[in-house]
Length: 227
Image 1 (cartoon, rainbow, N blue to C red):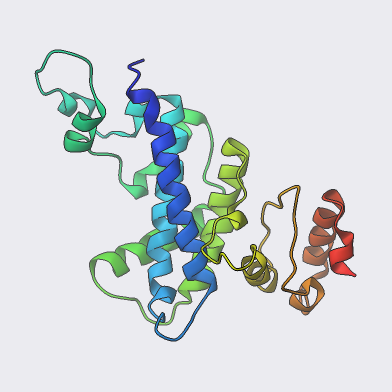
Image 2: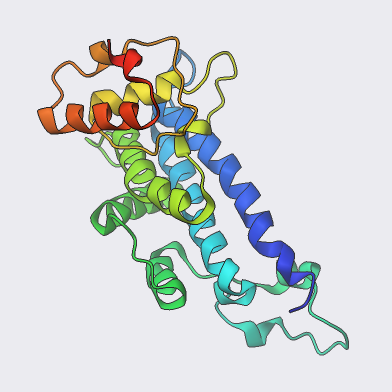
C-alpha cells in the first residue's frame, strides 16, 4: 500500500477524538451563555460517530471510505497522495456508513434505532432548524455510549468518558450524567472519581443497572466508591 494512505486511519482517529471531546462536553455541561450547546451537541456527536466509523473502515483499506475511487484519478503519474484525496475525495455519507462498516468489517452498529434518530436530528439542525420537544443532550449521550463507546472500546481500546474538555477535574461529571440516565459505559482499569458521590447519582436507578455498576467497580477494584 502507498505509504501516504497508511496515515489516513490515524489521522481520522485523531480528528474523531477531538469531536468526541466536544460532544461529551456539550452534552454534559450547560453554563449561562452556552445554552446553544444543548443543540450543538448533536452535531458534535454525529461528527464523532462519523469519523470513528470511517477510521474503523479505513483500517481495512483507506480507499474504502470514498464513494468513487475512480474520481480520484487526475491523470498524473505517480502514487496517489494525501493532497489529492483531500482535494478530490468524496467520502460516504453518514447514513451509508453502517452498511459500509458491516460490508468491510462484519461489525454492526450496536443501536441502529438511536443512530437513525440522531442522524435525522443532525440533518435538521445542520441544514434547517432545531426540532421542537426533543432532549438533544440525552440523545447525544445515548448515541455516544450505546454506539461510539462500544465500537471504540472494541477496535481501539478507548474509553469514551476519558474525552472531555473539563481540565479542572477528571471525567466525574460525565460519569455523573451517565449514572443518572442509567447508561452503561466502558470503565477504564484505572477508574477514579473524586468530585461526585456515585450512590447519590444512582438514587432511583433500577436494580439491574445498580448491579451492573457494582460489577464494574468490582472489576477495577473500586468498590470503595460505592460505600
